[in-house]
Image (cartoon, rainbow, N blue to C red; front, side, top):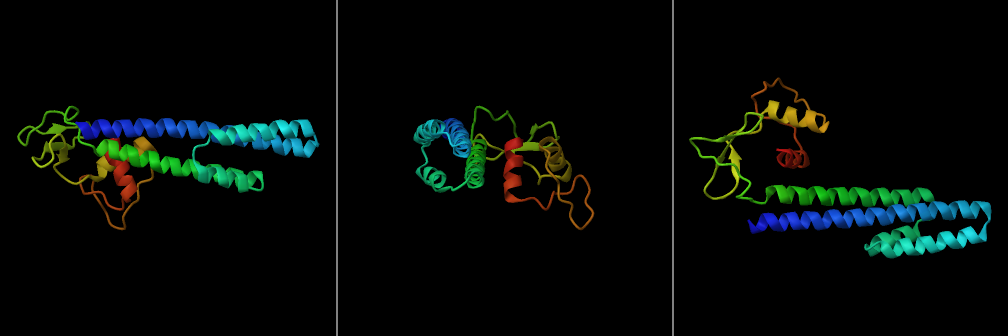
Length: 187
């Protein structure tokens, strides 16, 4: 139970950190846009105001490497690229923590099941306990094509088709590691 609560705490902290950093990056991007406009118009007052706004926004960013990248950026395209890369990094970090959270055993959340009476989810997948991992239920069989297809429909993902024919009850193939993890979280 402790591992699950640790995973939840870690997830919540990361989520708040990402929200704070995203707000600071958004504010910084807006300040740089104001500076670009001030430089084009030649208004020194607007330029000083934008520079103050940039300095204040930089103070709100915790990541020193990100600050350096924004300061080094020479134009709006480079700044947008830095911001996009930061968002992509944060998304990967958030997905990783979500997977850790989902993988953490939570005995209280596991439905009652036994080998004789498995837990059956809405997809018809049967899950049974394994003594070595209390609080975790394991599927009785590999993920079927139809189970993964439901996930793909629900998450707007493309399902890769193999070069051979498969039935709905065959094990799904051509699934990346990241997509397999996302499927487990989705379950």
